[in-house]
Amino acid sequence: MVIHVVQRGESLYSIALDYGVSMSQISIDNGLEAPERLVPGQALVIRFPEAIHTVLPGETLASIARESGLSLRRLYQNNPVLGGSPRIWPGQTLVLSYREEPGPELSVNGYAYPFIDPALLRATLPYLTWLTPFTYGFTEEGSLVELDDAALLSAAGAAGVSCLMHLSTLTAEGDFSNDLAHLALTDSQVQARLLDNISLTLREKGYRGLDVDFEYVYPDDAGAYAAFLATLARRLNPLGYPVIAALAPKTSSTQRGALYEGHDYSAIGAAVNEVLLMTYEWGYTYGPPMAVAPISNVRQVVEYALTVIPAEKIWLGVPNYGYDWLLPFVKGKSKATSLSSQQAVALARRYGAEIAYDDLSQSPWFRYTDESGGEHEVWFEDARSIQAKLALIPEYGLLGAGYWNLMRPFPQNWRVLSSLYQIRKSPS
Image (cartoon, rainbow, N blue to C red; front, side, top):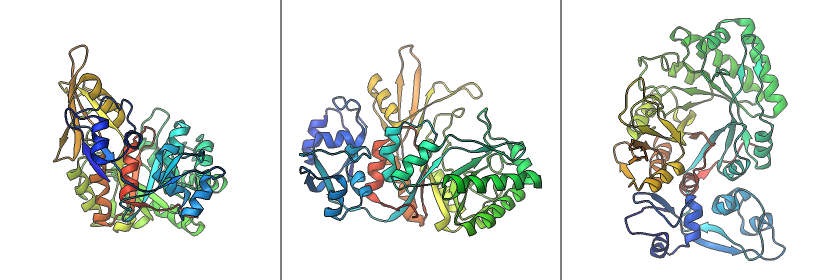
């Protein structure tokens, strides 16, 4: 696999000719919506098929997998044209292997809302170890706020992917409630009912573990939060359920701020089986234009976490989104628009912008002027920035990558991931 950066004057035809691969493969691997109009500075994943199979009459994807000694998951990863579907036809060509086999093994988790496009979910599942439907809230009495997760659980089960139950303090208004967290952490009766309801849901719905995300926990509740997580682990681990906790992206134990002070890395790391570092949102809706996850910031969080938490317990958070800011940025007034990587490239194409790449943050960005004369700045993710983030996992010996979130298509991300790494299977 190589990542090619489009130069002025290049076309899909000329790039395919230079690398000796088909235009259709490059188009599919990168989800090109307008392959006839590439954008200068746009990153493209180029993969080199080594072994090809032409489908014969009567063959099925399962029979081809058996004959070739591959898993169905690997066939899906090698052939994104299938979209995670087993439907094939005589004469169709399938890639059995690429020139470079994937390297180290890692786990992959992805978060999805119940309203995710079914086709997008089906195409993404072959790249996951875990799927985490988002999210179960709870009431002041300790009852769970139900999640319409049946379709997600069914699709994951059909693809052989295990699911984690997600518990958060998110309210119907879309905010994380520190008051609700305080109640669950300090009222023994509420906590007992919540624990009972979690255990019941895990068992009844077939979840394989619990992912806990209490954000903006009061600083005075930091100890109680770690104790709550330890109680969950003591109760659920003997039943075979791991407990994972999401952590704000801290760089020291004394870091100030409402998001950080309630998360004691050392205590939480000792209490749970695994943690997710939420290493994103430096560039955010109400902040100034910048990369969502600058690589230097991500490194700082990982290196601090490693001082108090074993590497094999740590998931690296990976963003699947970017932002579009209208300039000039005005603190307290400006509000960026969230967008996918493909939407970002489409904007650059529409307004004739050239995509730049910031080496310091390891992130792509560009500026454009809209029809009203407004100047915009866009930061997003592409194959290069994803490769840089994923490289931190084997470098530091981390468990894997946790994607927030799966709701937007990002084809080249999955090509980079499956080309460079072996994705762990879900626990059976």
